[in-house]
Length: 215
Ligand code: AMP
Image (cartoon, rainbow, N blue to C red):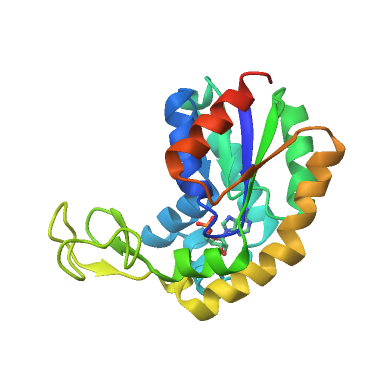
């Protein structure tokens, strides 16, 4: 099965994508993660993308499409995949249609998580990640035992630059202007399945998995 998950930053789409991928034995393809890996590796793509990401703006479509095509052609994508963070605008959605035609794949369903803005701001601005092992915490919802220190490995907990409140507000604005229309694009194709993203993580995963049973 090949899926897309849509949702504002902080809607929990990354978490749900990982859980769905595990349950359905498919690959999670997160363009945010692919880009962060490029930034870390100081590649040419990483150098171009880093500053754009820190401002909460979208990285150019040609870079994203290149990363996506490369990833879906790898052997581990054979059982299917779920796109997380892609497509982010209508141009990317149309380019994905063309790419699917080219590689003879098709998208089976689009999972859409609905979460109000205030919940998004609280969730995202409170997130902390471990610098060493990438474990994720939240200052209110899932605090570490000791402030600023990772429970798992003792590493330092930091706030991602693009999760500072100012940037989160800009990412929300970008989402509304550019990504929300992608929902309408897939609704018109009859592929969109919307879910209440404020439910507990486990309930939401179960709901999504059972809805996908009928795809
Ligand atoms: P994410 O982890 O999905 O929230 O992505 C983090 C940042 O990476 C975004 O704020 C964008 O700057 C960039 N990014 C991720 N996916 C895309 C995409 N499909 N198109 C353009 N920029 C993206």
